[in-house]
Amino acid sequence: METAQMTQPQSPQAPQEGPVFQAPKKKRKWLKRLIILLAVLAVLFFVVIRPMLGAGQAMMSMAYLNQEAQVRDMTVSVSSTGTVTPIDSYKVTALVTGEVLSAPFEEGEQVEKGALLYQIEANDAQTAVAQAELAVRQAQLSYQNASDSINPSASGSGVVQRLYVKQGDMISAGSPIADIGDTSTMTLTAAFHSADAKNLYIGQQALVTVDGTLETLTGTIESVSGADEVGPGGALLRQVKLRVSNPGALTASTSATVTVGDIDCAAGGVFEPNLQQTIVSMAGGEVAALHVSVGSRVSYGTVLATLGGTSAGSTLENAAIALENAQLSLQRAQDAMDNYQITAPISGTVIEKNFKAGDTIENASLTAAGGNLAVIYDMSTLTFEMRIDELDINKIQVGQEVTITSDAVEGASFSGVVDKVSINGTTVSGRTTYPITVNILDPGELKPGMNVSADVIVERVGEVLSVPVEAVNRGSERPYVLVAGAKAVDKDGNLTDPTALERREVTLGRNDESYIEILDGLEAGEKVYWLNEVSNPFAMMMG
Image (tube, rainbow, N blue to C red; front, side):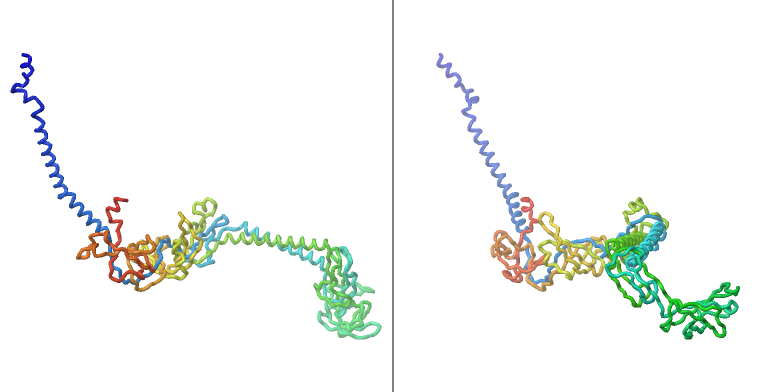
């Protein structure tokens, strides 16, 4: 039957293949797995995660440093670095070329300022100096002649007997200016027989008889001729010249005879003035001034008149310019000579000598030597320069004490003093620093070129209550420190809860590199805490 066939699948074998009996079995397996997973998670929490949380809490506590506020002896200083240099140095250079004749010094020697370092062959320069000296002498003569030409002067001593010009006259070269004569003494030339003249000598006294008045005067022989002359009747004569003081009546027309001892002259003579000359102008121009009058007594070189006008002025000015140019040329030649003899400009130690006697200084050899013949250091004082931040420069003053150390001289310290404070600052990335110069008082083993670290002692504060600089927070209106409240530490004083640290406002004073003065807000012995970012792993991970 069709009905039976439809129920045929209901046979005893059908339940094994149908889904009705398999679903309950799957639900029981997932439940087991869930229970096992929860158990594993519980084990992981107690074995791994919980210890890690405890360790993290401990590490957080360990990331804080602490120190008690204490009374310390504080010195306020400003620190920087520098490089040691000598107080003075000089690079000896050459302005000329040539062979080195001598170089009497050696590297490492001490030389004094002005000592000869190099003597360089200078034949051409010496010739130039000699020529320049001759040019100066020639220019001086030309100037003197020009000056004399506009200032006519007496060529001997005497009395002005006549003036040919007056002030304002226009004269030309060769015009007479004045007659000058000296009649205070007169000269007389008389002829003696040659045989008698041979017995006369210079300085011998003679008796002079004036013709007409028969007045007798005393004269002195000035010269006796050595040559014979033929006189009247063929007699051999010699001329004898005498000087006679003029009592006032002798003139150029007065004649006289002479007797020397018992020797009479063969023929007398006529008196002549000691000086009789006419001064003439050597240049043309206007008589701007007349400095003498008739009867004035003058001596050699006395200026009689001064000429003016364009021509006379130009002549003198041109001569003056020529003389000045010649003198300048001589000075240049002499200065050039100085370049061939090189001396030490400072006292110090020779640290470099690049040329010796026999070497030739030329452009190529100088370039190879860095342009230097030698280098001298004055190491009587060593010094160095420090760069000081703009926030600290106003604390620095000349004379302040400086303590110095150097890695090159391990374990040693040196003292110095601030020598100069410059206001010529240098700005880099918005921050300005100023140079100061420090003189080292006890250089010891320090040498030029060594690097040093230095602290300028600004103030010795004395004993004050202080805490580490990094313990102070300045992120609010007033600075503050962190101190431990009752909940932040355990019974042994160990920090257990950093979040329970209390904020304490403080009043700050002076500070050095490590500590800062606390004026108010803390007591000695109170412990302050601060985060040590370098050793804090959480801070490091965040960074």
